[in-house]
Image 1 (tube, rainbow, N blue to C red):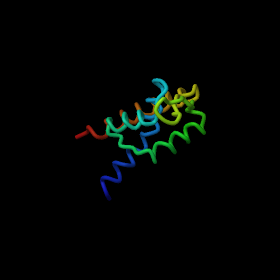
Image 2: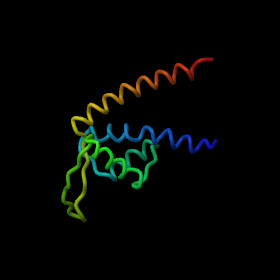
Image 3: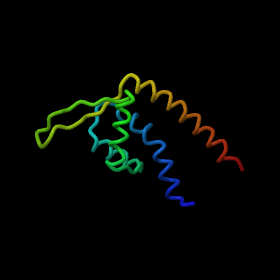
Image 4: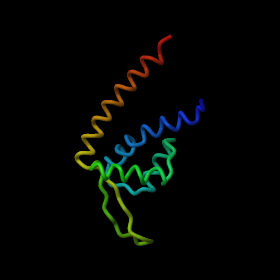
Amino acid sequence: MNVANTQIQMRKGLLEFCVLHIISRGEVYTSDLIEELTQAQMIVVEGTLYPLLNRLKTAGLAEYRWVESESGPPRKYYSITESGKEFKATLSETWSALVNSTLTITTKN
């Protein structure tokens, strides 16, 4: 097994959850999402993020609006929907349970 591949899969599994958290704070532009995820070492590229944002929009969990830019083409700003907030709350409960379970297992001698 390749440890790097396993690490990538672990991050991918949490990416949707992290994106929902970021957009729940308010409207965000894609490059700002990438910057925050990169700073948090949730390394992501546009080719990963755009399909994820599209899936969230299609599922009714996120939405976007176009904003004119003074220095280029219009920009999409993403935000969370009410359904997205409920979904994120459920994922938060799942995350807490997983953290507790993992700690229970990994801290035993």
